[in-house]
Amino acid sequence: MLDFLGSLKRTHYCGHLRAKDAGHDAVVMGWVARRRDLGNMLFLDIRDRSGIVQVVFNKETQPSAHAKAEQARGEFVVAVEGKVVTRQKPNPEIGTGEIEIIAGKLHILNNAKTAPFPIEDEITAAEETRLRYRYLDLRRNKPHRNIVLRHKIVLEIRKAMDEMGFVEVETPMLTRSTPEGARDYLVPSRVHHGQFYALPQSPQIFKQILMIGGLDRYFQIVKCFRDEDLRADRQPEFTQLDLEMSFPRQEDIFGVIETVMVRACGVAGVTATAPFPHMLYKDAIRKYGSDKPDLRFGMELHEVTDCFPEEARQKLQIEGRVFAFAAPEAANYSRKQLDELTEKAKSAGARGVYFIKVEGKNLSSSLEKLIGAQSVFRLAETAGAKLTRSDLVVAVSAKQQIKGTEAAALVAGQLRLQLGDALGLIDRTQWKFLWITGFPLFEWSESDQQWVSAQHPFTGIVDEDLEKLETAPWEVRSKGYDLVLNGSELGSGSIRIHRQDIQERLFKALGLSDEQLRRRFGFFLDALTYGTPPHGGIALGIDRIAMLLSGEKSLREVIAFPKTTAAQDLMAESPSDVDTIQLDQLGITIKGQ
Image 1 (tube, rainbow, N blue to C red):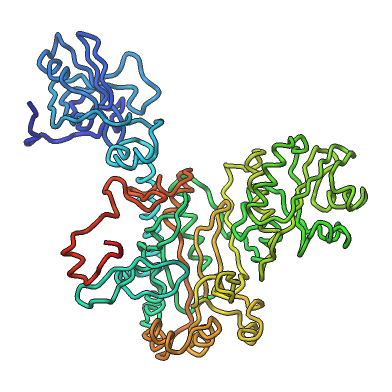
Image 2 (cartoon, rainbow, N blue to C red):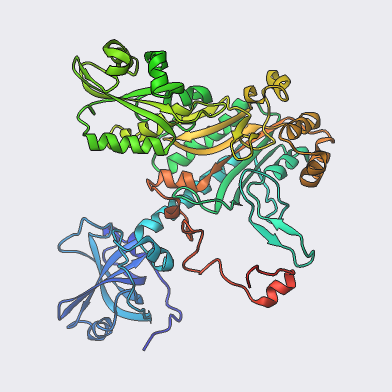
């Protein structure tokens, strides 16, 4: 028979009880985490969001409470009235290990079926099972700890933004479809048959309009949506810190974000020091083979094209530049390991991968027959190999060149990360922030066979590059910037285009007709004609920040109700079919039905 809560009131959270509470009466409420029956003595570990406390039921002194405890099982919801006492044998494994509660009365408030997996930190249950029973998974300490940390990070961000004079403004969830780099999630209109709202990929246009409206400093913790293929650090719905400022210099925006990130890191017990270093995009690519370089270890890339004579380049079908790096103490890599690196590189777009083993002054490489011993030595030296170590030099050429960037460096960068991790070179105790600037305004789209916006079509253009917009778009630099932490991009931003004439020129450079401009951006272009101030901003991924600061490898571990890589909510069984009557109201027919 279950009990009613009635007027019973909790006096303490389970995990908050300490030695100072010994001798006091306590009422705790939660779930039965563990049950141990020793006959006359029965122990229940009671869990709530704060932790676990041990409750003792003595058959001789409190027979009715003991009899009730015999009915309790794992995950039953209970309330316990009792007295806090000091344990004879403390348990250092838990925060409440110095005390326990001697139960006077037990109330069983609800029963529970046997859980499909143990409610413990370390479990072997498949992630799909955990997500299907997410309400049980959330009872575990680890997910709970991550969500609480995320809450504290967001709270600190809000405090910081308010102190710096930013106003939080909500922007619409139902808006119009605009090209922003990914597919929109569309919402059909019941009132306007055949027309659709789009869920926002970002509040980009609205936050720029807020600057036109004179808000001066806007921010928002906003939900955004993108219908794209998923991975561990991507979700169909995600949360951003979005902000915009009027009349900013680039360094003003950097200063705001550095203040925010230093404070957010502090909440997680991480020390971050501002100002953060800067690096040009072209240097990041050439040195690290990535526009989000991980600076926690070395192994920088070096161009070694000159080490390959023309005849050798022809035989090896090398086009473009060759980049190489030296992996310390990796000369003992086996043929199997080298083959695995080669396969990784070729899947990433390599034409060829060339290895040199440096063991003291002895160098061995299959390249020697093609380029000669002297060139092999020069290549190893240029790549940063040390004759005092047993290094492995890895050189890469690309199968296809990518306009506007270094294809071989991008491939080598992926091998650098793989070897850095495999060799244990990454210092996990470091937190390396980095601003990337000097991005190209355009990138080449192989599928469209044209230049497209590298970021979004409202990104500002470096003033002296304006004259190249129509004649040499691949040389045009943007006023964009990215914030990177430990090899992960936290967010992107830019100084925006605030002049209508320049915005229209950019749209036309992207191949948009006047009709397309009016249809997609008409209201925004009109707004630009009413005295738009210079402005700029940035958006940071809250999910990704929380993921990194909590030490997790997947965004799903810091989101209360995440989607799978197939964009499904297994718990809520979403997406799902809808009734025919709902489709009829929307004027929609499903193909194939």
